Structure formats: structure tokens, C-alpha cells
Image (cartoon, rainbow, N blue to C red; front, side, top):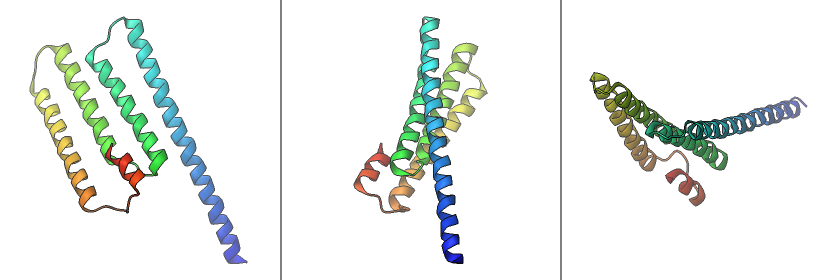
Length: 146
């Protein structure tokens, strides 16, 4: 009887965790979509689009892709987080140079951070191809490669 109750409690706990998990994913996906629409409407209202606005839309696109891939595969690709970070740093770099009209030492630091993140992607891709954590089905492998 004890094992049956333990199994029931574990099943119910797993159900609650999965329900929260999917609710949070829907919330993140919805908020990302809403934020991207609001940013786009802000650009239309401004009457002009700058490069950092376009990069902001790419950040939203990458966040949405992360949520979609997680729904399909139940795995969070770390590479996408690094891509978001690279895009955010690129946006910062372009905004800083265009608004302050003078490259300083900050440009070197941000460029170095972008290079470091690009090398991190290389290491993650090499490690995941050389030492896979799970055997991926063909559909999962296709989703992780994009």
C-alpha cells in the first residue's frame, strides 16, 4: 500500500511539475511574441528603423525559436542562449558607436566578449557532436542543427 501511495504521489507531483513547465513555456512564448509586436509597432510609430531595432527583433526571434525547440525536443539548446548574448552585444556595440560617435576601449571589450562567445559556440558544437548526451532521433537532430 505504501508503494502504491508513493507511486501515486510521485505521478501527481510529476503532473504538477509538467503543468507548471508548460504554463511557463506558454507564458514566455506569449510574452516574447507580445514584446516583439510592441517593438515592431514602436518602430512603425517612430517612422524609421535603425539597425539596433532590427537586432532587437532578431533577439525576439531567437527567444521564440528557443521556446519552440524546447517544446519539440524537451531540450534547451545552450547555443541559442549564446546566440542571444552575441546579438545583444552586437546591438550594444552598434548603439554605442552610433550614439557616442567615437570608438573607445569599450568597443574592444565588447568585441572581445563577442569573440569569446563565438569560441564558446564552437566548443559547445564540437563537444555535443563528439560527446552526445543522448542518442537523438533524426527529427531531434534536425531541430538541434538549426
